Amino acid sequence: MIEILNPAQLPQARETGALVGDILQSLKSRSVVGTNLQDINRWAQSMIVEAGALSCYVDYAPSFGRGPFGHYICTSVNDAVLHGRPYDYTLVDGDLLTLDLAISKGGIVADSAISYIVGDSRPSESTALIEATERALDAGIAAARPGARIGDISHAIGTILHEAGYSINVEFGGHGVGSTMHQDPHVANTGRPGRGYTLRPGLLLALEPWVMADTAQLVTDADGWTLRSATGCRTAHSEHTIAITDDGAEILTLSKRPAA
Image (cartoon, rainbow, N blue to C red; front, side, top):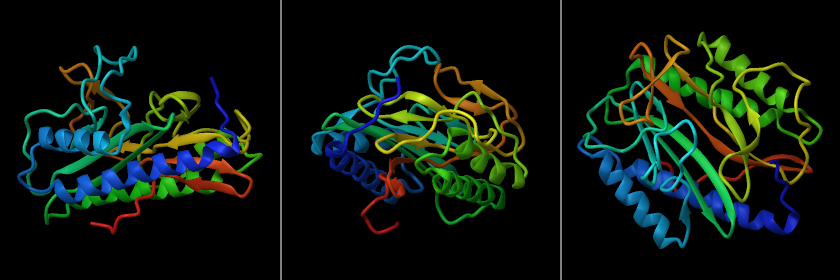
């Protein structure tokens, strides 16, 4: 299903998106050396409930996971890149942490992810991974405008990631959002321009470039959810939900909080 919002729904999409961005920024500021991933999940739960919103993850049970996800946020560390289930792990200096959050409020969903390095260490490989996904996300957003095609976005993202020297996995990518979290159209992180669905105002897309340092192959963790690099290399993931408007793409999941 491809859902197109009407203009009256856009303010709610903005509100939900800003909430996602604010929660992620708050969690980033609190998730430091010595923080347990289970604490991050509890903090996310508290902030979602306090805001009168709903988690898109707790009861989520798609075909690629093992039963309901059962947590309020994805916490992926180092070689984990997607769908990381919070578990009893305490962050150490130099860990590369990805926080991925999707919530619904007022009937509209927003989805976003950030990757960052915990503590004072700045491993060069981790920095390069994160920066590549952020540049690719910027390029994908710049390509998203009325009349463009999904392939234009995919091509823009893929060009940046390929130029940075990374292989690209196409099993998971961006997607439409609206009243539910995962909708069509699928937005692969590489593709041919001029192909696919034509973008129109009212379409919400979650764009999410992600890469692994030296492979494009994933393995599934024993928890049935967490996806890791097949070689154990580090990974990164950046994501924003955008709205296609008459003037181009509006980023909905920017935080209004000061950067940590």
